[in-house]
Length: 176
Image 1 (cartoon, rainbow, N blue to C red):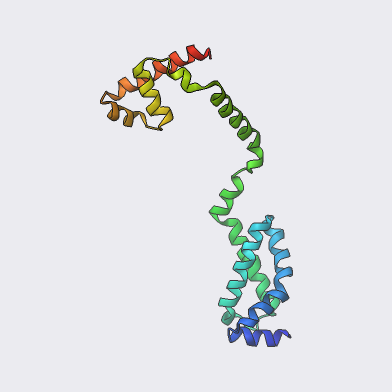
Image 2: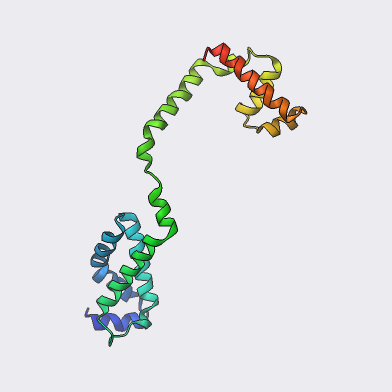
């Protein structure tokens, strides 16, 4: 299919034209986008966005001002630059890959296994009844200190103090 035939079909919004447009230009546009974006997944997203813009804005293309390829290349370049300047893209680049933290995840899993192995609840059961109740609410049931205060009908400051004292008692049992 020639470029003139393709343009005629695009102007008519013929669905077959979109497939031909993509087949003819996707590789060259992707290479330009990928050079700018430097992230394959993001570049693929930008490529899709570029083809949607071409399809929707075909009426703004003027053959007298330049070649069709130059026009779509400028759309790809400008869309890539917009992506690079976007706040979300910049924030995503600041986030580090989880590969950098795998060792931390492994270590935390080992810690959880150690806690389960030593039977932390068995040590908690050796504490005073009030401590058992507070630790159960705060650590095993996930209550906030304020919620524990309301549940136990005691002042928030008392919950905080008793929690600290109970944790110290637990440390003594565990010899930490």
